[in-house]
Length: 366
Image 1: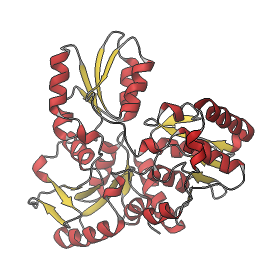
Image 2 (image 1 turned 180 degrees about the horizontal axis):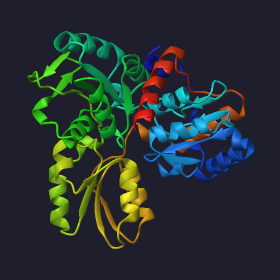
Image 3 (image 1 turned 90 degrees about the vertical axis):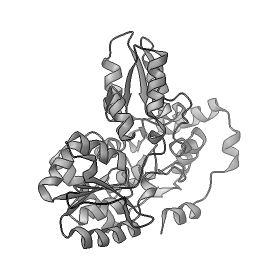
Image 4 (image 1 turned 180 degrees about the vertical axis):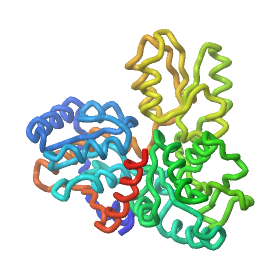
């Protein structure tokens, strides 16, 4: 069953939840958390709304949260406040007696949706014809369980924005070329960081099922034509404007931003790197941050001694991540309390096995 079919098969949240007051919803969420105690674990991604993240038992990036969830073996229910691929990863890593729940099944990821198994199998066949058995697949953790499983089955691994450089180095010891998906920008930025010329990185268009431009025999990386709909919106013009407005400002961005933006910024790194950099920065320092707005606003609130702004003040929050709101959180928790949980994420055992192999290779190699 596809994600779309699964979403359509789910029972929607009753309308009555939309009419509850915030204090009433918060009161009911707290009551359920107290009632279940360690039997309930709620991880919350950094990009979640404040109304949701306030109840999180742990905050972090997607893989970090999935790993923490797996360590909470007493938890019968993992109510994952994030998006679909994150909940899938949590289900892959947690035990068979644990149930992973996504409060709103519409909380997907546009980047993860830019690579599906049919496209990848079709691409792999063509790439094998062009380059032979010289390619190893790597996938960003921001991908579906099926894509992770394909990489695991073909000797590849997953990567995070924190360890992408190490994983590329690992992969190049295995094969001459890397197929990197689904985010072309993280792949290009990491490859460039390793000294790979841009002309030796070619983009693969999964819709057209061919290369975007010419490939060369020296091609080292095949970059899947995918991107983050939030981070791709940051531009060099944004950086120039920030520096014009404030000559003291330092620009830090996520490596899901375009190559041009990363090159122009003062610093680039994972969400954790951004958070730690701002945390350790001097009081009174000025920063423009190129990442999701909920996190930027949280950093502004947490560090009033620093001048912090979004690199693009007109940027919208991640729309799919923002599907998880207080009404959906309360509804999913009350269904758990009633003994009738909804939106349970369950990955096929074969897919989970191969996906876990890809994740395991990453943990062993980074």
